[in-house]
Every structure is written in structure tokens, then in C-alpha cells.
Amino acid sequence: MDTVDTDTTKHAAVFQNGKIKDLGTLAPMGSIATAINDSGRVVGYSVVNPRDAHAFVYDLPDGPMRDVSAGNICLLRAINSAGDAVGTCSPKEDARADVYRASIWRGGVWADLNGLVLDPSWTLYDAKAINDRGQITGTGDHNHQFRAYLLTPR
Image 1: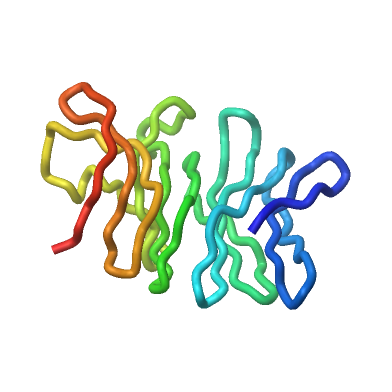
Image 2: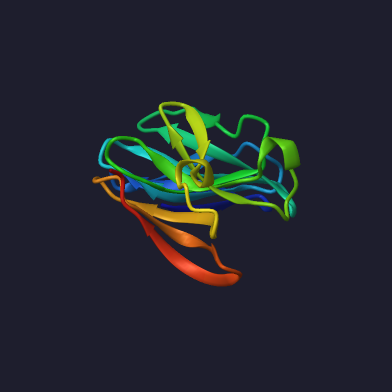
């Protein structure tokens, strides 16, 4: 995955069948592909403006690029073989660029990981990776100190 310059806008791209494939963009400031799984599902985000982005999913070979942000400011950073993708989203009740929560997009539905982790000493801000066992890594705040985390499903 990478980006290609088209005019003045960067577009998400993949290397497919010996060629660079432009995946397009959802928004005027371009798009960035961040991960791909073995099934050819690409995730990333498209930049609306410096304070707004929309998460996308693109299924190879022909897409289309789909906005999966559900009206929120969202980024997708990683995807596993099951198609579960993680990243960050602004909560609906506080949709602004300076408030983010680690989130998972599973089966077409977003979930705030903070609602799935029952430990009030943590605030999970970003999910960076997910593996095929469903383990998620990211960054957050634990007792007012910035920390990395590893979530393992039960």
C-alpha cells in the first residue's frame, strides 16, 4: 500500500498484478492506505481537511472505496484476516478532531474499545494493530500516564 500523486492530491494505492492501482479518494485532501489483509481488503482513511478524516474500506480487485465512518471523524490503521479493522474514532456525542477513542470496525459496525474494557483507570485513544487471534495493540492513558496496551479477547 502507498499513495500516488494525482494532480495535487495523494490517493491510496496498492501494487497489484505488477502495476500500481489507484484506489481513489473520498475527500478533497486525498487518501492513505494503511493496511491490507490476505483477502485483499484494504483499509485506511481519506482526509477531508486537517481536522477531519473518514475511514474507508476497499475490496480488491475493483472496490469501490467505501466510507465506513458513520458520520464520525475516523481512521482505520490495521485489519486482520477475518476483516476486523481497528483505528480511532471521535465519539458521536463529541465528534471533534481533538477527542479520539480506540475503536474496532467489525461486521460493518463500530465499537469504542473503552466500552469493551471494563477498567476505568484506562482511556484507550488509538488502536494500532490487530492480529488473527483478535489481540489489539495501541496507545492510551493509564492513571494519567501515556502507555501502550495489549488487549486479548476472552
